[in-house]
Length: 113
Image (tube, rainbow, N blue to C red; front, side, top):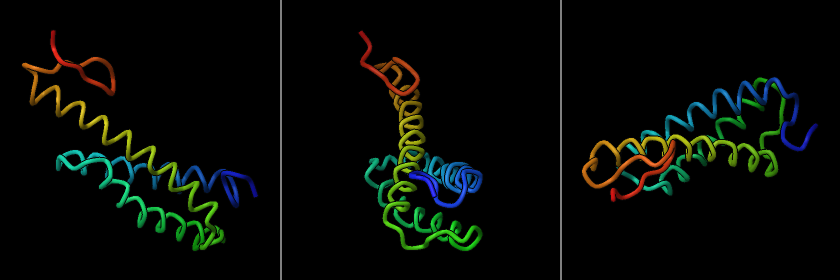
């Protein structure tokens, strides 16, 4: 048992990073497409993290009710959701308000001068 992964690094990468992170990224994008704030994505990460913990429990005999690993999974999923939300919001702002806002990097925008 490690600090970040519970059973093995392979199941952590497959379940938490690839499956859960992909779902979290898409959730962040969906929340941003609805012009909702990032706080809405935080609310959606709670049940998604529970689902990821259940997959670890059901397939790899991990601990279902472990606050430590739940928090680790939640933080990783929130990073993915935040990335998807910010990427989509940057694209929205620069495309919709292109006369006022310009792209100033991969995940940011600024007012035109």
